[in-house]
Length: 286
Image 1 (cartoon, rainbow, N blue to C red):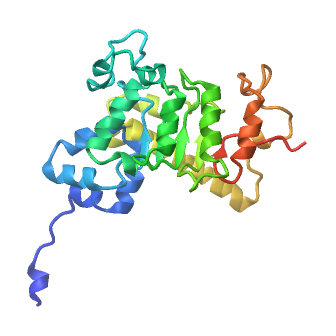
Image 2: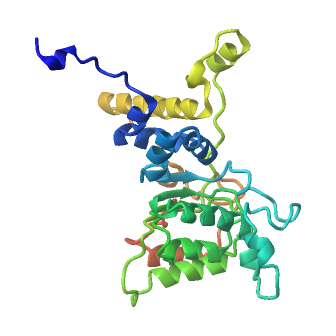
């Protein structure tokens, strides 16, 4: 008998699982940023695993982060999480700086931990996002965002955003922008709602354990969608088309899916960005 056979294999630990890049890449997007930081604070080994992995904040959704969703018209000035806004309350403070304070506070924290550059997908739907902040995300070398979602944001100057996009795709630019996709015109993702089965389980005495968490439910929902799509594709069934590809007329307008009609200037912006930055909208072909 070999000596190797006499050595008992050590049990697989949580650290071992999270050190597996494939597992962590699939798990991290379903964890809120606060939960990730709380996990890293439980043990030194976990902190090294979580904070050193470029997959941890590859997908950053700030829509449910309380400090990011703070309403500036009803909250203290320094609600951004650090004293950034309080220190700069002087005559040089611009309107964009004021309304972007909460998010800039979060970005500053991530930058100090050398995490902000790892973010590839950033979701800011419904938050206070001025055009100047979008410019920084697209142009500033601190960021490396490929997909940005700013649907239904507040304090956004539409003409200012158009100017930013014209600037980054100008013919004289030395390089193409890192940003490849911008979600702007559509609805925010609906909050996950528990199914009837989940409701019945929660009303009973049996606990679903880790599968009862919000992240696990979202993951299960997307797995179900993928299974339905795959089955339909294998059977040759037609897939339901996105609103933009249905032959039923306009998408925007009071009687259509999206009530808020954007200005006609956006057609020129989409045309200028064609082949460089994709949008959650398509130009009319008629």
